[in-house]
Amino acid sequence: MSIADIYDKDGNPITMEQFTELKFGGDMEYHRVGSDDIGPYWVSTVWLGMDHNFFGHGPPLIFETMVFLSAERDDPEHHGLREFDTHRWSTLEEAQKGHQDVCTLVRATYQGELDYEAERAENGHDSPK
Image 1 (cartoon, rainbow, N blue to C red):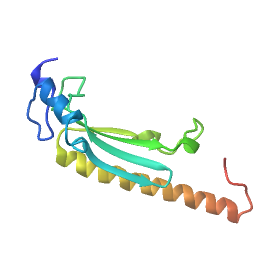
Image 2 (cartoon, rainbow, N blue to C red):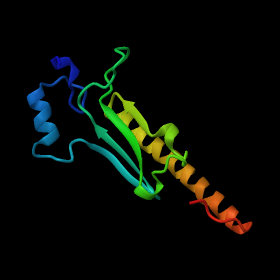
Image 3 (cartoon, one colour):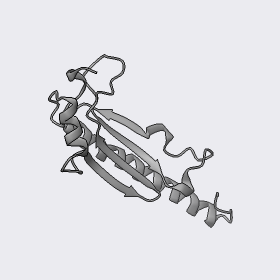
């Protein structure tokens, strides 16, 4: 891996030694951009440091937002958030905005699930398991 493949949070190229210090050194929160619990979902945005733009077109992708399901919701039959569970970003600003945008999508999806379950209960149907 060349020096151009690893970047700090400001997008400046850094060495593997610098990356290791930032990732695992003194400030353990350096990599965290955002973390939100929304119902049974956790939205996490982190600095990756290493370029995850595997296609080589466009700027380096050094931040990532992922949506995780809690254990009881991690069911292959549940299709709720699969379509927006991972996004990558080039800049800290994009990552911060992207994190908030994904949180908005998760909140809307979760509210839709709650509304659906309430409507089913109101109509005498069992809640889906």
